[in-house]
Image 1 (cartoon, rainbow, N blue to C red):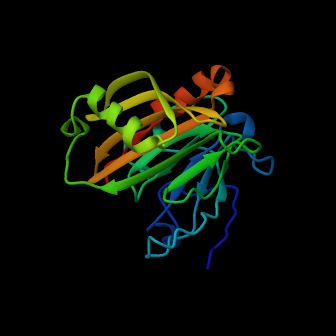
Image 2: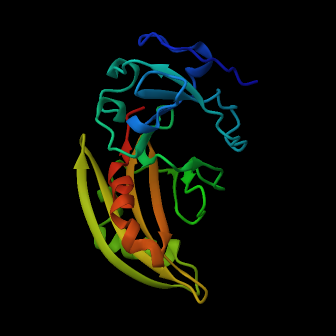
Length: 238
């Protein structure tokens, strides 16, 4: 059973026992803080996840108004220790070891086979989703050069047989000692075309994939906004 609590302030050194096993933290951009709280930041908890991972129930978010957030609640490299861009929120999944930003007006939804997902309130194909699978590799470089990895993923994993592929860009970055591949691509079907960014990384014995995208006809307007999401993905040490 979910436990609901709301309070005007919270001790920064204490987390309710029912949330210690699985807690996802979401921080608001300043102008979207709930009116019931005087704080400019908010913190979101989910109920404890059932141990059977196949029963991926919906996260029920609980907003706790806080006046300040300190890094002792989360790992030192957590997004909550950084300034969150305006009009974004930070999703931090401590038990599963990852975090990212998403547009503050997007809503959480269930995306089959994924650990977390958010979408535009009106356009479902504008969304971000994250999944991970076990791996015995230690670093993304062990998969191969970025050109080879991206080509194989987009052509043989992401694209359906009837889709045409166009890889637009690929970049590599290092953050907190972890390496990431981020790439931009288009998939064109007979009925529609989409464009996406994907970021992949390896850590904690897991191969993480974040994909954020939209319809191709809206891509020029949304590209920079969604690039922030792709570039914000981080693997946290578990």
